[in-house]
Image (tube, rainbow, N blue to C red):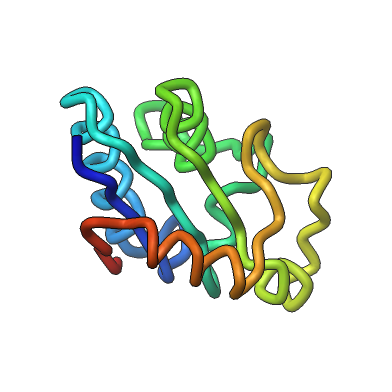
Length: 116
C-alpha cells in the first residue's frame, strides 16, 4: 500500500487544481492507498466548513470531508490560516492546524509527494 502526500496551493474555487487533486486523492483511497493532504497558501480556504456553492457545483469542504471519512488525514498550514483570518474552529471536522514540522514529517513518511 503506497503512502501519498498531496500538497495543495490553489484556492478552492477559480481554478480546478485543488478539485482535481482531491479527485485523485479519493481514487487512491478507494484503491486502499494511504493519503495525507497538506493545504498551503490559498488552499487553506479549501478546509473552511460551511461552504455554500451553487447547486451542481463541487464543494471542496465536502470533498475534504470525504478524505477524512476514508481515513485520510488533513492538515492546514497555520501561518497560511493566520494570514487569511481562518481560525481553527472554522475548519471542517477532521482537519487540523499544521506546521512546517508536520509537513516535513509527512514528506519523509510519503512514498509519493504530489504537488498541485
